[in-house]
Image 1 (tube, rainbow, N blue to C red):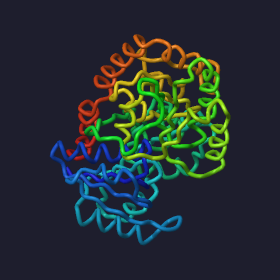
Image 2: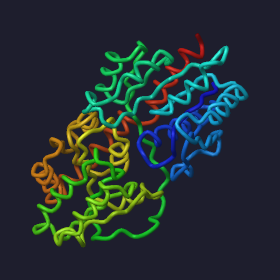
Image 3: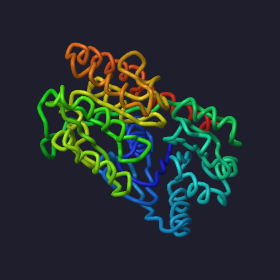
Image 4: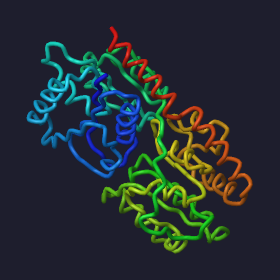
Length: 359
């Protein structure tokens, strides 16, 4: 089968990781797998398997007609049978396919990260263009319910994200802090990730757990939110204990060098970072947003969002108890392998592809 994944960038985000992961695992299953990046290359380009055919459109402007025609020619030339468009790349996918006589099937993969704030999502444009979708894949149940209610496409599938553990690499640069006492938050510096409540929670623990450090690993967009984070970590209680790592290509090594994984988001879809915590055997503290509680089950600690007091209490529960950390780490690792591994995901995805390919 000839399948094309489309994504707008290769920056280190959850949707981008999923597009690359799917393209890679399809080659392992013997399929002709292609990956198209529309606007911006980035850190994840090095993670693309050599067997994956790669196209970069370098799209400029709001529509980017040159990129549209380039994509359409590519689809025709390679006789693509399924186009799998992730997030907002659906726009260019529709423009490329709409005038083809026998267009491939179009699947839209909805990774929307603010699933807990869907009342604020502009749905009119999605409702309009959803008539072109043959299938919608939603990464959590909230997004599935939203699509079934608001959009024209009637085929909607809830399919959980999966994570792939990359081969162990060395740390590109050593981490600060003390071995055995590091907390990591793998999340780009976006407001919805709510690092500010995490910093407040960590500050509450400063006096009693002064040897512990917090490592924020994710892309810094150098905006007002980033400046607020930098301002907060200049406080005396945090200045020497919080580290901004930026976007890293050695994420697995960073996670392996840490001892607790935390996500303090106020809204989520199904964060791939949480699955990566599990693959790296980290005990976790997460907020109850998106699919986080469902993913963690009873294998970690879940707290309400935007509550630094309860977040601090959960972190302290793990920081103070090595035995509890070890138990949760093992349970969560086994849980992620069983329920969010690539084998199960690919089986379900191929069933979906084949339903169109064989029809």
